[in-house]
Image 1 (cartoon, one colour):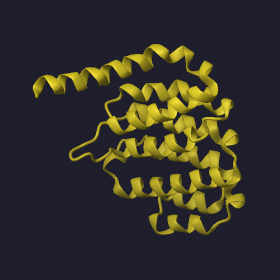
Image 2 (cartoon, helix red, strand yellow; image 1 turned 90 degrees about the horizontal axis):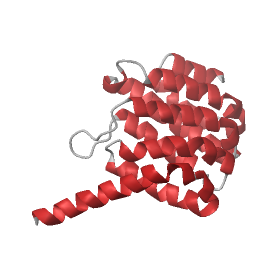
Image 3 (tube, one colour; image 1 turned 180 degrees about the vertical axis):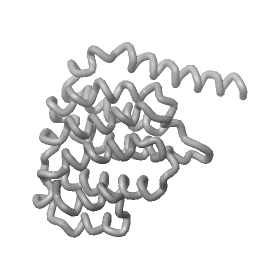
Length: 188
């Protein structure tokens, strides 16, 4: 792993995290998978939900990583680690707390989701991502669910067969949302 990623993630050094943006994308590209694995460890710690410093370090690092992946067009190389981090978010609370404020793991999930699913036209990436993506449809976060639905429709346009095994879960999610809308009309 690049020494700056090692320092920022190893020491959870928020004061140096911004320096990651001064590095060239190609200089850190070989470190991205390892950095994602380290982020997964940090975000799985028992105090992550309440540790603002760790959350800020993780957010900055994820932004830097996803930017480098996009700029170096290396999504296939790092897809497994991205999907692994994304999947780990499912082990945590994703429901907004209070006034539509996303939980720390919902923020990670959202950032990773957009990085992965913007590559809906790359079947190897979608083959890894779709089984995890459909799990987010029933996790109680409307914003994640809505965005996920949009990305899944794009994936269906380019590679519908990847979604075939998940049709039942997708339809149930749609019916569940429609049921909530109908309940609202009953109240009016």
